[in-house]
Image (cartoon, rainbow, N blue to C red):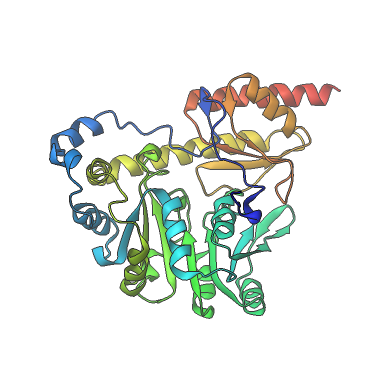
Length: 357
């Protein structure tokens, strides 16, 4: 009889149940216009890109990405989205039973991949003072040392709270920790805090994750990157599956990296819409919104479940938390202006109904 892993019995397949008209649940960039990108990329694609494995070092892509951020190509490892990079990093540096530390709350896939690797997953809770979460580097370090943690992984800005941590606090954590620190900066382009990319030459235990899924608005392309000192990059690359990225994906990525101004303009537009929607939410009775530094907003009220249900009726998708430290919160991505206007109408309607009861 086939024996399955007992520790994975409770896992559920992560699949989308329904395609909706207004998907604000995946934190995508719904504003940027890439209508001409495919046409440009096609000019660079040859039949050999389909027929043969080609350059499995993806030199052109790594050189373009390294130039975009002012680092060396030898400091960059590419993957099929940040998910593959997380999986590969844990494979590289963890053995079964090793302890890994993340925050509570944080990106749920950290826990999933840790469990798949047989690691002991630990969570350090954010400090919710006056209804807003914060991070103490000293306390996290003390906890990590006490529990003999081998690797720390966290997102900045934090997903799902949308708040951002100051670079000096994260750097203090990197400097004081003997193991690997992975900082997932998927949403950093939308934040007003400093990235840790400028520190990868200073620390031999720092890995920064980046992606083209959020600010670049190319979630379907599945392009993620790990940036670190050269020594760590070599170790990660050893474990990365060969030919793990389609040649066509790499070619499209190279073309997209030529459009810095387009991406920056899109990010600025999203931040403007974000601020407008936050201002609106702050005017609603009994509603608390966290100070977002991402392309999504997290808020709570006694009637968030009703907002969620009303959104479903209008073919919206966004996250409503029913347990954990985010219980009662909604996490909603920033959509197009017309979508956010419709959400304002939904929230206002639900709010009025609740106040009239």
